[in-house]
Image (tube, rainbow, N blue to C red):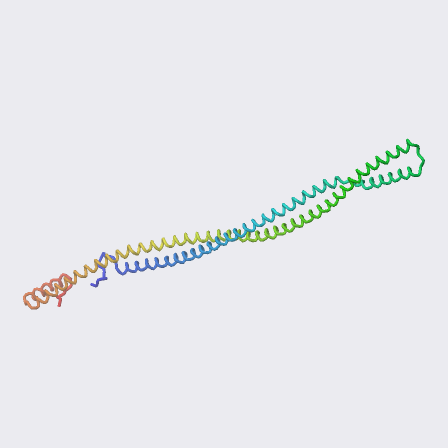
Length: 293
């Protein structure tokens, strides 16, 4: 009997070895699948890190542009507020102008000239001449007041012209700042769109990565399960091999002892005759005959 030949009731070593190698094949198969899932997960994680970096860069660029936009917006609003204040101030000054004032001055001058001509060309009584002189004096005092007011009004008109120029300049600066605000806002919106897109991509990648991670765990668990079963069966195979080896060694020693005895019997005629009798008896009983030589 060879070492691998099972006795009746003993497990078939070859069958056990086939099962063992099948378990190893299954383990290796699931290890390969789990390794592939892990590599795909790691690749997705690398892509997610890239998206995270892009999210941070786009956010940083957008926020910086928004900060610059706020500065130009504040300048624009300041220029507009100054212009509006000057407009209100101009309206107040314009309301103080008396458009009829030049006509009043001209009329008074004409009236005074007429009175003087009357005084020179007309014979008047002392009382009438005195009254005329007094009237001329009154009109000249009124004219002096109106001329003074007219001078202030001319200065006011000049000031209003300067105010209009300042208002125009302020609105021009406000328009320039508004153009900068619009350009910066457009650029910031582009960064914001890329920021939002990167967030959406990152979420999709994260979901795929989590799915691959769960797949990796499930496959690795199966591989470990097949590995543990293979190791358990390996222990069993090793135990059966040990038992077979021990049995084989015992039988070999028994055979060596038998052969030694057989050789001794060949040298001893009585022992040889007894061995023949024993063999004949075994043959009668249906057993095997082995003389050992």
